[in-house]
Length: 79
Image 1 (tube, rainbow, N blue to C red):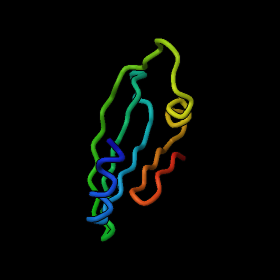
Image 2: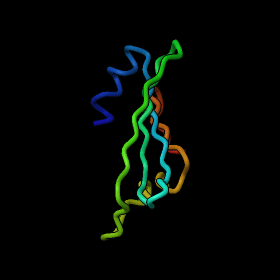
Image 3: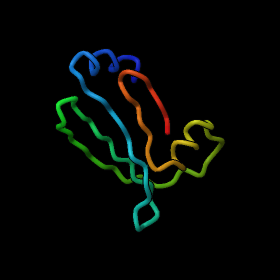
């Protein structure tokens, strides 16, 4: 999905980032933030139960443990 939307976001000077946290009920929260180069941004948050089944991708685990995952349209990074 990222590969498909990245050129479109870049063309219109948008960036997409994600903030990961934990709600008071123990669920994981993921906030998606869509920002424009001129400064406007919109964000929305979803709360999801923790998935403790099976093995996980190492980059997904690292992203979940970090406070912010940043997927910039010019250079994709996971912080």
